[in-house]
Image (cartoon, rainbow, N blue to C red; front, side):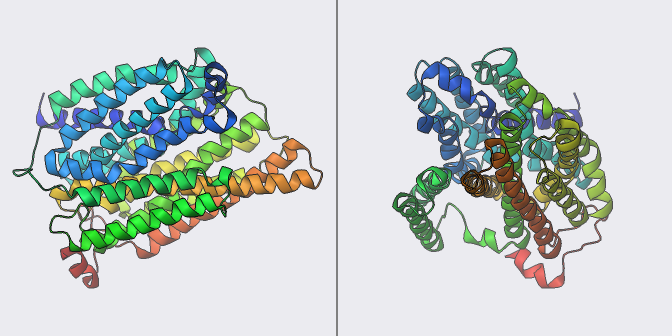
Length: 484
């Protein structure tokens, strides 16, 4: 096997590992009723099947990325794959509700380790602009399409088998990824590792992020203006402020603040957060619309996402890299996010007596095209200015912004939907009509988020040239920022 073949096999192994992690964010959604029935979850406790995973996943991304820079990205990724796979077995055979929630939390820890360093490893494999753009297209499909694949796979496995298989499916994947990575990804470690981890900083930011995720995902149930929610979010803000102060004074900071002086890095995080908010909400709310309004079962909901997955795969793997190399980063990003906004806008008009072909399929196809085009340039812009020795940390920062944006956006849009549904019920609307009205409002708000991401990316990003094909050269006024 030559060097090029080895690189691409390594890419596929890394992307498969990250896909396993990403799809687990949504794979449980359509299986929740079956899990509740079998393990005796209360209605309030059931949310923790999702929240426990998001809590540890979001909280440990930055720490995992920094550990990758200090001790080797491959070592951190392999540890994450192993812990995630073992936790998946524990979840599949969980005898009690508590056991399942703990297993999901351990899955989140492993998932954070894999997601935080996979992008850094991929960036290190490909230095040629053309190959890197193509590789980012593959990884972009994992990031953007993982949610849709998760709903599809969750619906199929739950409908044809049992909910246990949504966890057992991770086992052969995890083993295959571990074996492939050990064989085709070089074990490159920093020359010095001892005593460089900023433990106080790591503690502050990890607790702050976990509190933030907890406050956000619980805000709809506890109430956004409740004492509990406000206290949790205030504590997260205070700890984040303390973390920033700590990093500014620390000799070996967990997150060097100069990273945020990189224009593309910072702008891409904002774009990614808005985009993730729209995407998370779209996958979640379309599933609810099809189940609660159109009356689909778990298998039908899963299969409904198949066109979106196929279109997204084609655009990510065959089209996106060519667009980036021909037109640069910004035009595909703006067009892709604009199409995603249009997809959400079509869902905002889905009626209570809607049909799949007329009211769901067009939005699914538009979403597949837009997401397939957009994620590649977002990732290239975010990672393009980062030094190799900080790629793991930068990868963790990017993933954290996506995660936090997705969690916050989903919580906000679900709150909008629930409020609108409640007011419609009070005014005399039927339950299906009220649900549809709530979903329509949330989809419209999601469309605004995706459109805003397109505008921010198009106006403020200053991407570096892609192999001489990008007409958007770095302006002179940004030269000092990139050199900082």
